[in-house]
Amino acid sequence: MHPSMRSKILIATVILIALAFYCVFNDLSWISAGRSYSFSEVWDALMGHGTWASEIIVRDTNAPRVVAGIFVGAGLAVTGAAMQAVFRNPLASPYILGLSSGASLGAAAGMLFTIPFIPALIVSPVLAFVTCFLTMVLVYSMARVGGSVRTETLILAGVAVSALMSALVSFLTFIAGDKLEGIVFWTMGSLGNAGWDEIAFMAPVILVSSFLLITQAKPLNAMMIGDAHAMDLGVDVRRTRLFVIIMSTVVVAAAVSFVGVIGFIGLVIPHILRILLGPDNRHIMPLGMIAGACFILICDYISHVIAPQYGTLPIGVATSLIGAPVFIYLLIRRKREVGWN
Image 1 (spheres, rainbow, N blue to C red):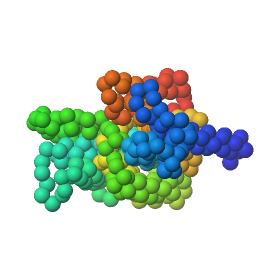
Image 2 (cartoon, rainbow, N blue to C red):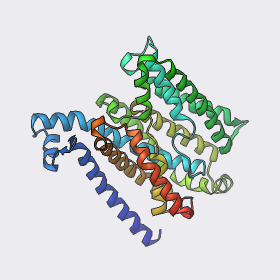
Image 3 (cartoon, one colour):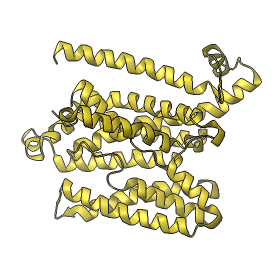
Image 4 (cartoon, rainbow, N blue to C red):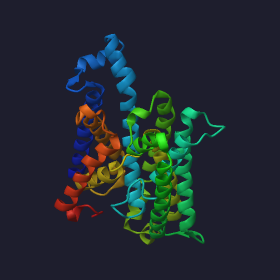
């Protein structure tokens, strides 16, 4: 590695870690419109030395939301980088195979129908996780011809299945009646839906799957050049692609099943890091986890303060309002640098 690139990566790592700490404490400090705790008050509350009110707000209300945001943001960012490498498409995202639509269908079904063998409190997350994974299986099965799967066919199958799932979600929304609000707000995303019990399941699943994805960074670098070149370098393209898709699906399923659909993290974060640090996934994927966590926490804080008279803005809306303009700016100003070169 060139010394200048090594220095650039080191600086980026230090900046992202510092930004992560700032974002965590900033989000933990939020009380209400125009009010927040100081750094020392947040620290005292976390250590159990704060006031009764500060400990409830910081530890019981804000902390679960922040921790959920860290894992969801990190998971979606690393998954986005992996998907873009697998499909050799900088427009790919964690939801390219229709995973978000599949999860939305399961969540909507869980809100409308009673499942006898699943407790009512967890029926929507459980069905969202299951239908998200089944969507991946369906898409991969549709795209498989003989013993091979082409990336173009995978994308087309994902688009088709996503359209079908979205239509079914729209139908369930149409017949939802008094449960309409729950379905609509779930599709907008909310970190507040995840408590400590949900985090205890979600966090290790996302963490382990994300690190397994990072272990595939070197083969993914070869696949970005093309399948033929990757095979010449000794990469088992079919096995690597399937493994990355499965791990990515696990991450997405674990994330969206508890917090709903949150977009643009897996699309924008890898782009920004590639422009700054180059295309090497060995750097993009681990740093993307930190950057994704920072991005979602910034969006979460903004969602609380942007229009307090209307309540908290859904996190999915906030990430789109911020992510879409950033992505448009990157396309306009850095057209030659948003690819792999």
